[in-house]
Amino acid sequence: MMVPVAEGSIFWSFADVEARLVEAMQFQWRTESGTWGFASDGPWHLIVRDWWDWAAHEDKPVPRIPLSREQMARMEEASGWLALAPERDRRLVVLAVTALAAGRKVVPWRALLRPMGMARGADGLRMRYGRAVTCICASLNAAETRV
Image (cartoon, rainbow, N blue to C red; front, top):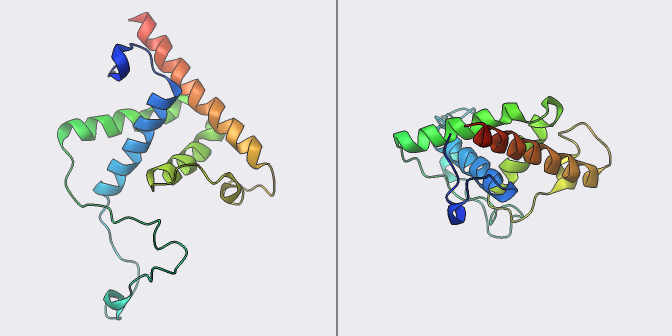
C-alpha cells in the first residue's frame, strides 16, 4: 500500500483518497479501447460539437497514451479501495468520482438522483458519499497502524 506524499503524512485524508479515486478513473478512461457502437459507414467524423452546445465546453478529449506500470498499479490499488466502501454506496462513489474526473469542480448531486434510482434527496447522496469515502479512509488508516 502506497503512503500519501502530502506533507509527509502517513495517514490518508478524505482529499487524498478522493484525488486517487479521480486519478484512477482518468487512468481507466485512458485504457479503454474506444470502440464506436454506431455504424462506421455514416458521416460520424463530420459531427463536431458547437461551442453553444451545453456540454461542449465540459468534455475534454482523453489522451490515448499507454499507462506506465506505476500508473497501472496505482489505478488497480485505488480501484480495489471500492471494496472498503459499504456495498450500497459503491455505485454512488463511482458516479461522483466520474463527475469529478470529467473536470467538474463539484459533483452534480441532483443529476445523480435518477441513476441512483431516487426522486429526491440530493443532500442525502452527498452525505452518503462523504461517509463512504470516510469509511475508505478509516480502513486504509487502520491498515497503516497495524503494520
